Amino acid sequence: MSHHPSPDRPLATIPMLQQRVRDGERLVMTTAYDAVTARLADPVVDMLLVGDSVGNVCLGFDNTLPVSMAMMNHHLEAVARTKPRALLVADMPYLSYHLSLDDTLCNAGGFLQRGAAAVKVEGGEKRVETIRALVECEIPVMGHLGLTPQSVHAMGGFKVQGRGAEDAIRILEDAHRLQEAGCFALVLEGIPSELAARITRTLTIPTIGIGAGPDCSGQVLVLHDVLGLSQGHRPKFVRTYLDGFDLLQQALAHWAEDVRRGAFPSPAEAYALPAEARAAVSAWTPDPSTTSA
Image 1: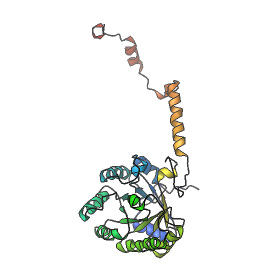
Image 2 (image 1 turned 60 degrees about the vertical axis):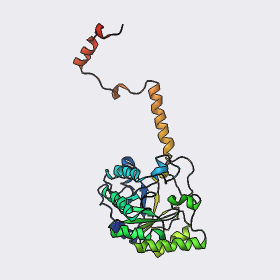
Image 3 (image 1 turned 120 degrees about the vertical axis):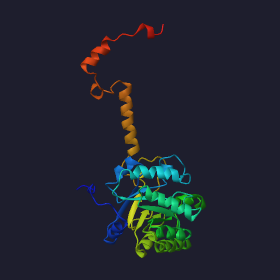
Image 4 (image 1 turned 30 degrees about the horizontal axis):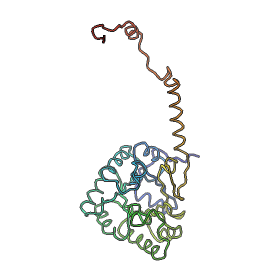
């Protein structure tokens, strides 16, 4: 049986996905940063996230902090041009929702004008008023709690959050604050499984886990991690389904070898002159007046 949904499936909407969770289904979300990754993932997943993780996955940064609105708009537009059927969510990058409410609404509204269906905002209690304002402007918001990458320095690194009783209760209470503020779903990242399960059971909106155990309403992983395209350290919650980096490099090495030994391109991969033009080219001789002495 194919694991691929029908390519003519209906456009995913927030109410549709929420109802599917109430019906007992689990949601799948992955990242897309350009047209190729969007076309690859869209037929398979329920939600596509244009994540600020583009910074460390594609742009060579150490973390997400250098990612700007201009960068995010560039990648969002590339994904949106593919007209995905999955729900398209865009990450609000660092400093895009921290300076003023006007800036926040303009940045988030610009995402929707570029094709996103929702935005994702990191943080708990301190983001409540921001989220309320976004929702009041008809901008759907996905929250993000636990290990929030934009807070990497404040957290002292990429560390599991919510292990202590006080921190666990804070995350649990923040989840309910964000639901009350109007979030349609929450990403729970890097928290103990039991805490994520408790949050999921006590909320009425879906939770999307990444390093948060099996009991969330759905799961998200970076596409490059799933396909084994990322190099270096991988967190314990990442499961790769393909050794993509090595396979692609092997294909490139095979092509390079064919070029060097003259096996590429073959006659079948080259264009031939028509007979009349071939004869004219064969008969042509250089004009002595244009030839260097």
